[in-house]
Image (cartoon, rainbow, N blue to C red):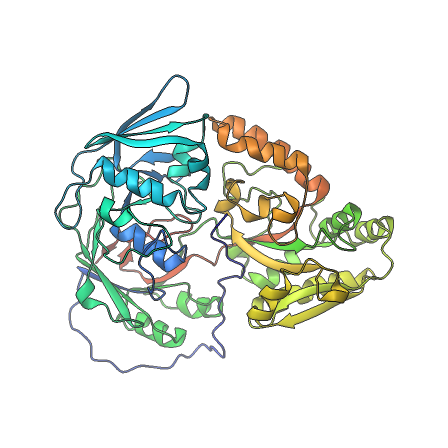
Length: 534
């Protein structure tokens, strides 16, 4: 399954940043142009959001395409391109009718055939895989109506159509979607609130969007990514400025309006400027995680894994990965802190500071005899270097023979795939991170797979947990899913599939001019509609 994952924290640290930043001399453009917003975003290199799960590509999809359903601020799916929809009594046939006013940027109308082709192409990605496994037929009834017929009920169908995990289901023209997902679409013609300005593309430097004057927003108020997508400005210009200090100087001078993902060590500079604001748009953030090798000693023994659960001091790790307590907090639920399914089932192991004595006892019960515990360490990311040092120190304090194995990303990614013992180039532990929001969908969360050899690195295996996880897509109500989540979490913390290190809220932030408002606070994606500038 191809799923968007972030192995590293987006906590880039600008080397040598100081309170005094280099000044840049640029001609001032005169009065503020309230119809143009200038942002510093990651460079856009791939345009097709079915081809790539990269953040820049998915954000591009949010701007120029539209979706059948969209998540509101409570992560509940709401109709977006769909006007009316219904499901048969046997829960096997869904009928969708498109709302009025939908049109492509080239002036042609959106049709049901476009939707059918887009769903089928999306079904070739990891995000759409489950739907296609259950689908019996996906076909149009008329120009505005299409159906999805299932071999067996899928209670989470609309949630799946609205997911933000991996490849979003952006609707494309039939002639664009009628190709494999492995073949890129490059036309950039959608039906969304913005048009891509091909003439202003400067590869590696900047790209731009213009307001789609023909776009008809839904009448409902904006709520998360759902509701009316109202565009209040005429142009969005996205720049790629390599130096964070140069970007911040331009922000302070009013030459740009916002920077996405400013380094945490520049927060104090930003907050000291009355014209600037730090806004966390991804209130879910990322969950830091310690993956354990379930195949090799000592963590093939559940007692050793339970020892790690008691040993880890989340507060100590958070002091390293999120020094400002406003942007980090402990996380004890495998379903994250922000999702509807977060719960406190079997979390009595958690206590501030950890419990080293209990951890030491459990290692003894596991029969630990001084075996080397190798911790993979990304040496090119300072925050990971520091956090893994904290973990190693905690292990050594209770007599565990912990050894750090620093390397660049290439060597790190190759070694973590090694399932052998440490003597043969294997490993014991490594640190990673993934979206807190994604933890709310155990069918999509790479951490919440306990299928053994087919699971993500660490290869946890628990058949009872997997049997419950398989039920998730079939459950229709949130209350029933909450009950299932508690059952799953109880099992997870018994066999200890992994170790959570804390939730970090600096992965989705903007440093912006106070005059720019309207950023939608949702995880995973950046929406450009709703912005206003005074």
